[in-house]
Image (tube, rainbow, N blue to C red):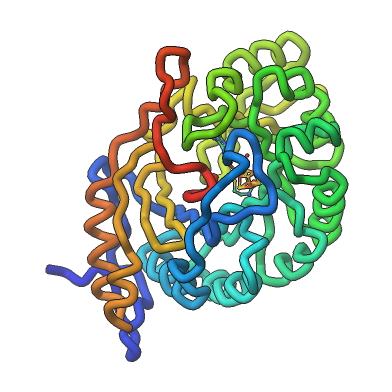
Amino acid sequence: MTEAFSLDRQGKTVAAARPLIDPFGRGITYLRVSVTDRCDFRCVYCMSEQMTFLPKRDLLTLEELDRLCSAFVARGVKKLRLTGGEPLVRRDIMVLFRSLSRHLASGALGELTLTTNGSQLSRFAAELAESGVKRINISLDTLDAEKFRAVTRWGELDKVMAGIDAAQAAGLHVKINAVALKSVNEDEIPALMEWAHGRSMDLSLIEVMPLGDIEPERVDQYLPLSLVRARLASRYNLEDIDYRTGGPARYVRIKETGGRLGFITPLTHNFCEGCNRVRVTCTGTLYMCLGQEDAADLRAPLRASEADQLLQAAIDEAISRKPKGHDFVIDRRTQRPALARHMNVTGG
Ligand code: SAM
Ligand code: SF4
């Protein structure tokens, strides 16, 4: 068998000889890593208020996370997104950003980025920029402080706003992600968009996905983006554009604001045919699809040897099982969540 990768003298993976291609011919070039399942918010669509988190002893260390990410970079992964839970509440997380930035410097990695709720950004924005992070996603569903508190249960809008200011002051390009929520922010979407575009930020809207048991009924939260788009089209000129960021969003340009609006539509328009992503949890479990249960343990092969052969073999085996796609459904007849796991386990 041809070697799937090259090794340096310490037995570490150093170069891609063979990229990661799944059974449907899709190249895997994008890795999302949930560095912690913990969070300082309890968003109503993401978590229940009483969550049981993973025991800290089960977590990969920052060094192990670095090794895992580097093994994927060596196989042709070009985009790395750290997420969570809230990635910025993981202790010493900047150590990981700084060490991963060597792959940007070498050219092996094209982009290092994160998704954050913004609560800790005032503290970390400058360091993120120094580590080579250029663009970040900040999740924000409403500009109304009371509503914000109700949606996040524990969050404070002021802190997130200060975080956005700090990110822009540090030169980071910010994209705002908002989950479209029936009766919560549906009337506010035009205002949220005009605010984001007024600050030179793209806005992406996300359909709520049936991941994990939460107290509210999913069907009461779900707002199809096909409906949102039709409503926006009666008020603005929407022009389809080819802009892509490597993720699943499909963008339009709003003529009136000049800004970009993205639609992430796992329910109304399945985008799996172009999927280039896999996800790793903070315990080293690899999910080949956000919408399926199948997973592969990478922690055991990672810890079994200091060289990366076992790890690379486990990654190959897992990618050979990447499914064609997910089949999310939200309706009154489908009472159970599609998957038991909450979104904070795998990250967005
Ligand atoms: N804590 C960070 C944040 O909120 O940005 C990163 C992790 S969070 C799980 C990533 C993204 O997933 C957020 O934009 C969040 O709004 C979104 N999200 C969480 N639960 C979701 C669900 N059930 N359906 C759709 N999006 C969800
Ligand atoms: Fe935390 Fe992000 Fe989930 Fe909200 S969406 S509870 S901020 S992990």
